[in-house]
Image 1 (cartoon, rainbow over the protein chains, first blue to last red):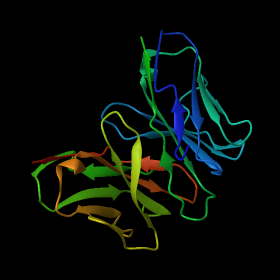
Image 2 (tube, rainbow over the protein chains, first blue to last red; image 1 turned 90 degrees about the horizontal axis):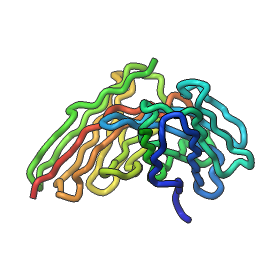
Image 3 (cartoon, rainbow over the protein chains, first blue to last red; image 1 turned 180 degrees about the vertical axis):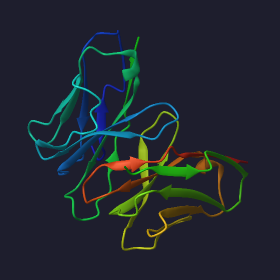
Image 4 (cartoon, chains in turn cyan, purple; image 1 turned 90 degrees about the vertical axis):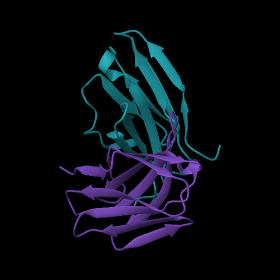
Amino acid sequence: GAGVSQTPSNKVTEKGKYVELRCDPISGHTALYWYRQSLGQGPEFLIYFQGTGAADDSGLPNDRFFAVRPEGSVSTLKIQRTERGDSAVYLCASSSQPGLAAEQFFGPGTRLTVL
Amino acid sequence: KQEVTQIPAALSVPEGENLVLNCSFTDSAIYNLQWFRQDPGKGLTSLLLIQSSQREQTSGRLNASLDKSSGRSTLYIAASQPGDSATYLCAVEKTSGSRLTFGEGTQLTVNP
């Protein structure tokens, strides 16, 4: 596809369960970002990948959150022992090679609801 | 720590009006600033990107300006239309390829 895709679009889970959220960036984009957006707020940064490695993971709120990008393309955000406070929309973005004032292009998001 | 503020939080205007959305940031050492549009329940659509060396960018009825030294940007929308109704977010990037820091957005309603 032409844009960033995210699956699932909606995820409902119970407190304490494990979830995985997937992001498929624009083909050829080396940089990939995860953000989290609560209702009525702007997105908050979680983690940034350049290629396969996490260049900046300082936004991850705690060690229940983990993300991977093993082949430098698709990324998975993993949340262990989910809590009600994890409910939010999780947004993924990608951009082309940094240094070229590249825009970040966002996917439609995954709405996570923890009951 | 960079903080981004958007004023007003909400704005309702009649169709055809020209309007200005404001964005301010506390740390003027930025690489670029990006304006986004978000429709309800949707992701973000990039509208304009202004590099730190630029003062403005234009796309159709949209014009964004940047005054880096004062930590301010404005998004000007000319001849507003009901289809412009959405939340508008500004975000700043400190260094190339780094995270975006977002404001909380301005919710715009254009009434027919």
